[in-house]
Length: 105
Image (cartoon, rainbow, N blue to C red; front, side, top):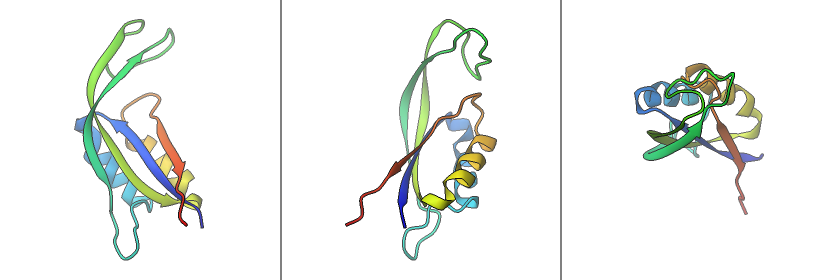
């Protein structure tokens, strides 16, 4: 079974809701432990292009803002449900959810 690492950046104000969505969708299981995740502060950078409706900032202006990086894990067959749950809880118009395959020898 392929396991995936999940990476998400989110405003701190929505971090708890995104973590709850992750876990409700089945992410965060490691052996006999559930709801496993980590979080730390990062600085996000972006520029909304014409047609965008940014959660923060304005179109055409490069933005910098403190965010939280959340990491967790899931099985590959859970990825679609996890992505949808995170996007439903995330405030950004284009929430980025990275799934990276894990090497498990």
